[in-house]
Amino acid sequence: MRYLKYVGFLFALAVLTLSSCQEEEKNSMFMTVSGNPGEVIIVSTTNQWDGEIGKAFRTHFQAPVYGMPQEEPLFDLVQTNKGDFERVFETFRTVVMVEMDTARFSKGEIEYRKDAWAKGQLVIRIKASSRDEMVDLINDNANQMIRIIQTKELNRLAAKYKARANKKIKSQLKNNLGIDANIPKEAVVATIDSTHAWIRIEREKLKGGYKHQISQGLLITKYSYTAKQQFLDSVLLEQRDVILKKFIPGPSDGSYMATEYRYYPPVSKEIDYYGHFAKEFHGLWKMENDFMGGPMVTYFVLNDEEGMIYCISGYAFAPQFNKREYYREIEAIAKSVRFN
Image (cartoon, rainbow, N blue to C red; front, side, top):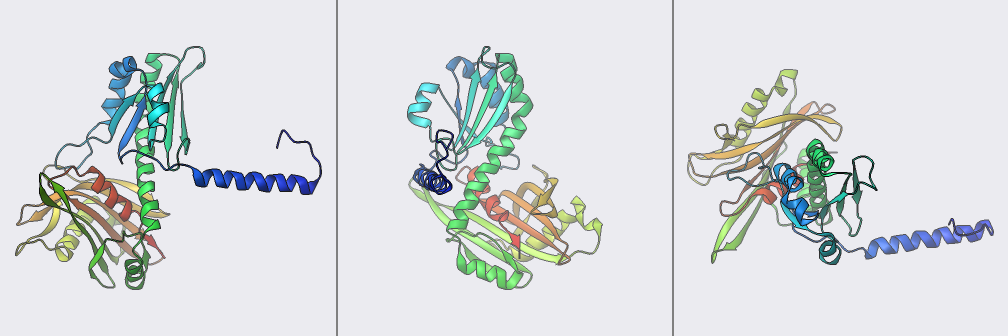
């Protein structure tokens, strides 16, 4: 509009309307992101990647995910130079660009941008005047960058599940528990009543010429809130074990799901859960009286209006495969639970 002289209100309105339509058409034609979940492209020179800058990225971005039975990194890093990036990787889901120039940048800065070259994309530009400043920027802001990337991955999954949600299960959750959630179409309800729902996703995947089991599950229960002491970590974990034992039996007689405390004790933090006070736990589950286990995430959410505590637990089981992305999937499903 800055290139046009004012020639009347109607003409200006027409131009604005046309511009808006053109922008909408451009967005609708935007390519969707490429790359696999959990992959991050680092755009840098080879020398930067092989030196202190690359070391800083690897230290933080490839730290092990807490609560995995076998060590897995937070992200899979792929380094490329600017030329190859512009030819091949420009639509990648998550891009971190290393920009170092003494003349252009007087001080360090980190810039976040979404949908730069593709729909659903996250681009992080790290600008610095020197190598030492770049390393300091990465080290000082790594936790924030990791948190933003993880949130973006969860949001992508949430949008996917919302677009193809299981309408039958959504209806069952609303009628029985008064809640809403985005559950994938392939999920099935194992058990449900007015106080709980156990939802399962079962599939098989080929490896080494054999089919192997992959299981994901979501257990939602609610019980009365009577005192602040109920939100002590020890009380919540004890309650979770009672719930798991009651609602998730194992494959053999006398087996049931429980919390693994020995190898990876559960870690917790207070969070805001869509306006409700909550505690989030990450750690491992195990099968008592059997040989099964895997990662688990649990949210204990206080619904003040209802006077109830909701326990929302998601778990993954994939003994022959890396579990990070299966775990992320179930975390996205668990975090989609809302109160009506």
